[in-house]
Image (cartoon, rainbow over all chains, first blue to last red; front, side, top):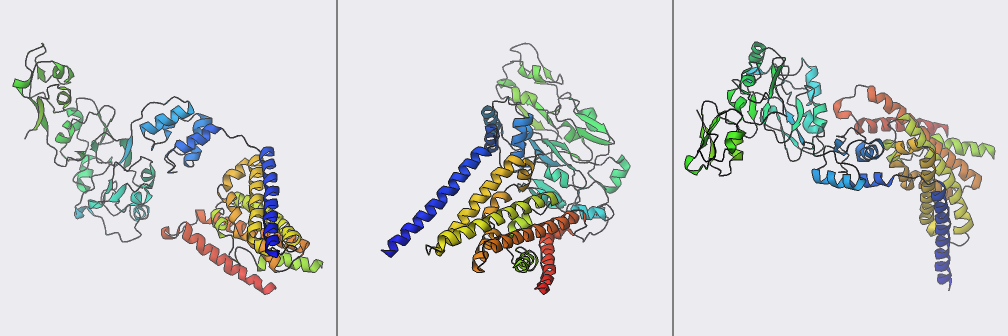
Length: 336
Length: 192
């Protein structure tokens, strides 16, 4: 009997306590209710939730609040995929600002393996900022990647590794272009560029040509050859340094082939050779598509049904006609 | 009697400081000591919850648990009290001081599981304090926590601009600082 009483009194007491506190809380929740815009909750649930800070707001919740209250565009989040962005804009009833080009971090330095360009052996703290404090880093070129991996450590997505030549390698799939590595680099040689582009000027040195040659074999000397060869006006030379206007670049590789310093590279194609288009004439039906797409007047035959031919001297090997040809009878061949 | 209350108060703040001497409630101590203003808010919130919890848990202990021989429900009911109080405080802060609510972030709901709050409630019972003594002890404990948090935040704000070796930045230097503070607080043991 005593046990039963004990059980009952325990249940009764805890029940009563729970009830009393519950009542107080429910009253308080009415009294102190804060109206939160339900769209903010929706936005938080649809944002990636990685809190990487790539948008410049304090975490995903901060960006969600800013999107709803201050009308910050959804595309501010660099991590969101196009599908996720569409979902979010639909849920919030906001216009999707359209697909933004996905960016990827790229190291604008060719690195140079040659130990002869080493200024001194750095044995201090393994950190780029610390190394820069010692005579502006251990390399002769003041703009070379320090190579101690501060960017690798800063990457919250594990997209960076330190590869050979003490240059960071960026995993394009894992990179979300949050920009942490850009800030971590004391030499400011990491840039966020269009993910689809593969042709880059891998140098960040504004020094004059002879000065660059003294400290590096693969640095930009500002010789203008790339600018002259580019048919799309996509190369700008400023401060003795070539720069690619990615909005104009079609990645034809003409500049890659031309660059005497091998500063301009095509990613994934280590020994890039200049190419020219060749038409397999029997297969050609004379549709004139290649003629129309060519920017260099390098295709002969503008009248329909007439077989086309490539004027080799004018072709830069951009591949525009290859992509366009419905018969797939144009191929690019490397030339020596 | 008044001398007794005073010594309970002083002991709770300095000699048996919850954070630096009894190593309770370390989570908010490390988590919310980045900036002085949020540390002040957190300290006040914890103090408030502690005093209320001390009084309410004493009442529950002596009015309900002891008469019905249900002391084994102590932890359960105390946690219930603390959780409810924290919820209540959270609602009030959210409504009245949104900026403080933002600054405290996740640490505010974490007061629920702050062992310092449960600790003060259980210690009141174990030491056999009366209602007033419990309230004073809770207030002292809360102020002790507030004091420790404030000291820590002050030091950490200075550490922000100090030249700390890279390997020591962040958590390591914070723990070292906390350890040194605790050693310093050991000196108060001589007061007793």
